[in-house]
Length: 390
Image 1 (cartoon, one colour):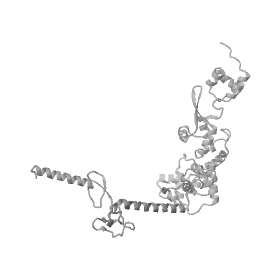
Image 2: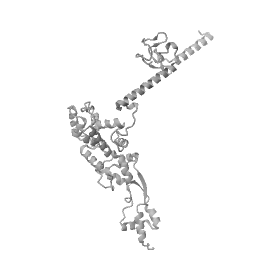
Image 3: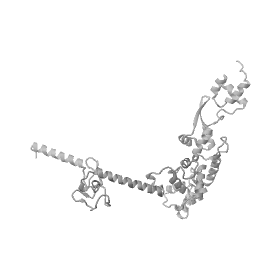
Image 4: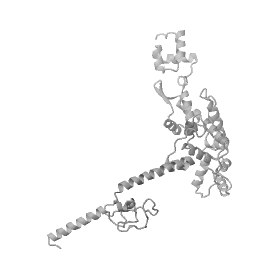
């Protein structure tokens, strides 16, 4: 067996520079050496393990550092778009995550992560926002129990006692029991209790200071429980405020739409289905647009009604239950424009064909089936007369 050739100084420097950029088989080909020879020299030079070197970390290591579950949380992270790259290490395919891209992903999905479990600088240099997020997560862990901790019998009794006193709101009970307001609401529903905590006063307007705290908290990635603690309002009230402005309770969407501005900047346009969260100016504009549209529709229906000149003012007579072709309007209305007695013809189901039809009189059959039955009767009479059976 021949002796392996010695490593030159240039080869060692080159190995240090290229370590972590290629897989072991590729580096063995580049240096014209065996894989074992590359691994031995790596140990002598004190180079880190290939998987842990460079700007990547294994997905398993990342999940362990963050305190997440592999079977439940990893599929959710993949659906959310976690940047995963697969690398072959000695014929083994390993899932890797770019650290720099991970921090960008984590900032956009800060609500998913609990950085209180992550040791500082465990993943290398950290962005500035991680320190603030870790502080808020520690505050929340000390204030709110995790959702996966089951309710005990004593907690249920304490909850029922507080609710039935009718002295505490959701926010008060949340601080007493160290449970989120959503968890309390779900628990009352599961227990089948009709009583509910005191309703918060929705007439109290938000001050500029409270809006400033809300803006800063959203930008820091705080959740609703932490915002409730800092602002002094219930998490439910904060959810309603965020939804009324950004049409979504997701704080990530609010932070994305807000950008570098303050709360209220970048709010999306309202549609008719969002009339409950419109301000006075938007409601008046919507009413004017709807009134104008109704006028256009009325005029168009008059044109398409095809009624004679005598009944030109009763343009919706064909749809009204109170119209008679001989007497006219049975409610003695002057015209359809000022009518307050309009009642749409009620739909009926045909007994023969099952189709839905509209007729003022109650009938078992639609007009088409009535005509078919009349024709069938005429044919039967004609047949019986022709064959002398009548």
